[in-house]
Image (tube, rainbow, N blue to C red; front, side):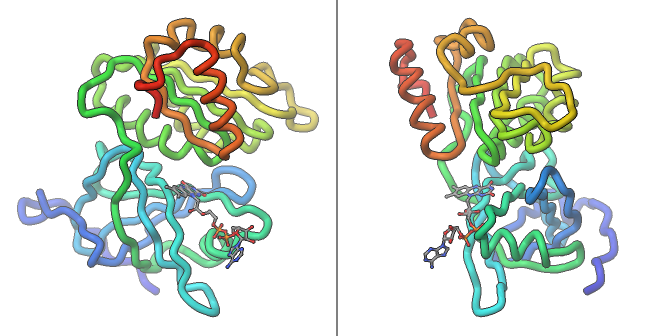
Length: 251
Ligand SMILES: Cc1cc2nc3c(=O)[nH]c(=O)nc-3n(C[C@H](O)[C@H](O)[C@H](O)COP(=O)(O)OP(=O)(O)OC[C@H]3O[C@@H](n4cnc5c(N)ncnc54)[C@H](O)[C@@H]3O)c2cc1C
């Protein structure tokens, strides 16, 4: 399939917002970590994308044997509305996500529905955030942090991601790029084990009460967004409740 020619933005297209009756055209596939890739899409009509950071798309994946519908958080930011991305991780027995990693290439079109979801930044503007994630649960953090970074004022975000190993940290380069340019974006990675023959100077182990105090000593004042495997989210929730955190500010 051929890639559509580049269409420059013009007055007609300004304000033309993508809706899910139009298929998405895959424009890039970027490997992020083992079995993880970011797929970026444009609208062939030149429409722009409008969504809230933290919302998701549902993709229709034409796997052999029938269509599979899979939901992925949008990992791009609405502050960059010309394209939209999802970052997906295939587990060993995956069918849908594995199909994407093996078969979905730039130039192919795919049906998607959405955006949808209520895991979004508060409408009442909070100034201080603590984004806690594990593994591919980092995807809403990528969108929210990029959005705050692009907006450029009054950002105060502490980002914590736990990965199995350093080489499995998803979105590391993007997060490091933003944190290196905005002093009030603080970045912390926690790993379960080191990469062989590589030095790791970051944190190791479980995110615990001592670690959270070292990472963000003002965590009680922060709006917390947590995303990851269920046991991880349960552990974070229990930890915050035990620390007297106001769970009205927990998402
Ligand atoms: C709101 C939301 C946001 C999400 N965001 C992301 C994201 O950003 N990135 C991401 O990678 N994932 C995300 N997910 C998870 C994603 O939607 C998929 O559920 C996940 O990727 C697994 O799909 P798969 O096609 O890889 O695996 P599947 O093929 O669905 O397999 C998953 C497991 O289910 C089993 N299974 C599959 N079909 C059957 C069946 N018919 N009967 C019994 N067992 C079965 C498989 O053996 C396997 O163990 C999100 C999910 C939700 C709900």
